[in-house]
Length: 359
Figure 1 (cartoon, rainbow, N blue to C red):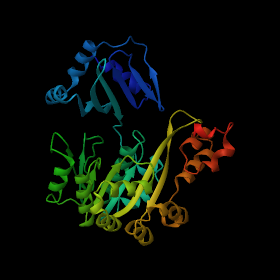
Figure 2: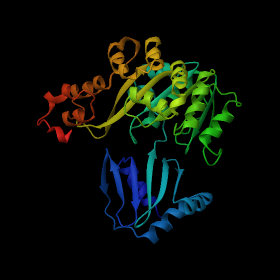
Figure 3: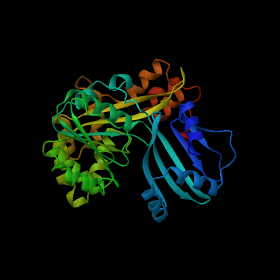
């Protein structure tokens, strides 16, 4: 039994999402979005270093000493998996462990919009899942990949840093590749992927120009590609992809993206008020010919209004999803107002309307 196991057990017992262990502070667990301290003295740099090195893969220790931070996945028996991050901070070593559920929930269990299951069955194109850090993007993608795994006789290739949800091949063949362990980078893995006969490719994070460019190329040449970005809405996702490229290339990229992009799912998490836990609200963009034309012509500012009028095609405004939770009394008016797009819709549900400088 490793020294750190007592904290992992506490994380699982309290159903927390993250465990924070940093020098000079007691252990903290994020429960339903908020950090709570464990009844334990502040950790010293020496005892925490010993604790973290005990469970760290040998090659990662050297990398950490060279770079000052590392990421890796860690199995905890048959109880859970964790995504681990070690970092150096002003008081010493620090770490965060994100819980990765052992069981992959289905789209139905997660309450994903129906269109997400249709995305899993597409033959080609780019689907992007977006949202802030810790909003459940990986969980949503795992459910979509599981849907494809259960219904398609195809090759699914995932490229992640690190590997989070581990899928067992069902109807499909699944291969997982980890950046750092199995390949040098997302870009090198994507270049290799085109020679590995994949039908579906999951790119854990589209974090730079080369990765985004290769993902678009794969989607444009007959593969179904899923990826993530840290953007707040569907329209901003389109802008973010285009803005990564130099201005001299942006018109060409608009044309490529207009052809390749088939959908965007943007999500955020809300603390429940009816029971312990959190619930997700979703914005969905289904790219059809009119929206492709807007992307091609650089008129992405019109996308939100197209989502509003395109509900029958599967489009879903974020505010609709938030309002649905609010009317079902799952979330508070204050949080609905804070995370909504058109805040005026949610003012009647506030006990106190904030001053403009508070918004």
